[in-house]
Amino acid sequence: MKAIVFKEYGSPKVLQLKDIEKPIPKYNEILINIKATAVNSGEVRLRKADPFAVRLFFGLFKPKTTVLGSVFSGEIENIGSDVQHFKIGDEIFGHTDMSFGTYAEYKCFPENSSIALKPKIFTHQEAAVIPFGGVTALHFLKKADIQLGQKVLIFGASGAVGATAVQLAKHYGAIVTGVCSSMNVDLVKSLGADKVIDYTKENFIKNGEMYDVIFDSVNKMSVSDGLDSLKMYGTLILSAAGLSETLKGAWIAMTSNKKIKVLTGLISHSADDINFLKTLIEIGQLKPVIDKTYLLEEMAEAHTYVEKGHKKGNVAITL
Image 1 (tube, one colour):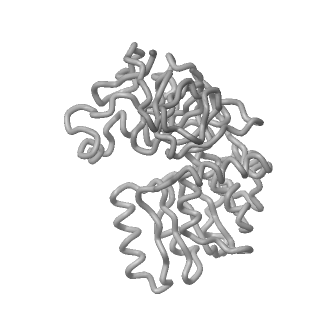
Image 2 (cartoon, one colour):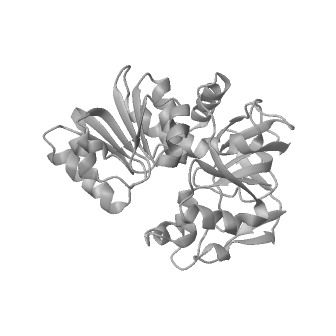
Image 3 (cartoon, one colour):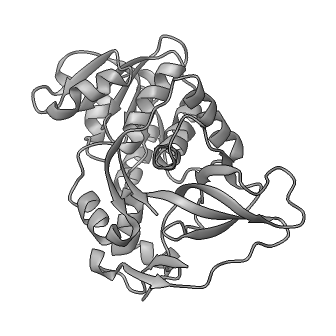
């Protein structure tokens, strides 16, 4: 089967189209013919080993995982003898967690993975881009325990995580303010934001508004700015924070007289989460945002585009 393989850390040029062995499902696994995947910022960081700490978990001198890709949509081609909940021909979408491997034509999954039947109203490309931002935003917003009528600010509201966070926060009944660039103001409004701030024209901390939850989805907001605009007992979400921001956030949580809760770190998810996202899709409360689509053999170009800072949403890959 065809796959995008990388055997050394580095620039997008390390991503090479190769023929590798097609997997065979174990007794409890399903074999999926992947029709679409997506490129996200986390995979770019893994490819580059940036920050250096990536090497401590994924291989000090060279990557242990040679096929990246964490999200997908595809069709079941084969199943193991003990599989009960899926059948050959089912269209599936989901998230691999840390096993990766969806930059390839086929991948095996245990049937209890973070997967679900694909919404029939979505193409494979549309379904594939939902899980990355979906499970990330859902993980943190559930922990924030948003209540009806609370004021939530999403920084980076047009990105893969931010665009989903806007829609999920509206589902939970929040009053949502999105922060994005000029070119994406209309997009963020279309996602349901009650107010949109163009950060090129206005600094949200200077308008006097105070929020119950501030969600920085892109690691480009000053932590101190977030603190200044949070209400007492507010929640600061740092979903894309590096080590220094995480430590700063922890310090704030310990020392702030506002008794701020800071949420950051690794996420967790399950099939229930993917099915929840599917339900929102089917009732019209969650839609994908796709910036650009590439072919599998154009993976290096896709990584270059994401690394340079793509304009909005997700970058999809068609197989």
